[in-house]
Image 1 (cartoon, rainbow, N blue to C red):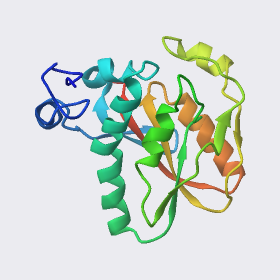
Image 2 (image 1 turned 180 degrees about the vertical axis):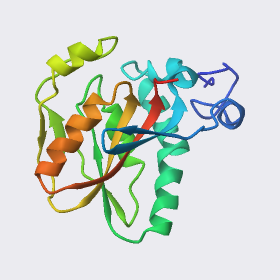
Image 3 (image 1 turned 90 degrees about the horizontal axis):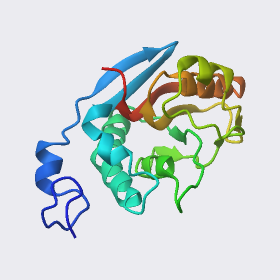
Length: 191
């Protein structure tokens, strides 16, 4: 197969050279309300890869990105914090045969970090891509949480734009007695 980024022959969807030279995470943290949001990349760095999420190659790309970012992060996190932490993805709705957010949460499974798949689902399937802040505020996701209560959680999403979705998710989780430690995203649109 060929590397999705450079088109050279590769065993993986992203070759080792691109992984080591082009897609080195530049971790940043942004405060959204009371929530710390940690992102691994700026959106512009990953745009072509992130836009593949509903194409056939998207499954392999998101799986590779999760292995490069989410997996090492959670391994280091649980090494320094021995309590159980649950991983909750933002709306793990299946589209085009898989859920791109579920791929990210799955990569974070360890003995002390437990994914709660499809525990936080949106009733409103509105697409926020390219929409204004006002539109996002007028069309909330209306999340339903069906997971465990009284637990510590890391929220997962692929992209943070305005942070409205993450704030809405945090608010719903808090009403269920869930302590959201922070959120992780692959990319931050904010420059």
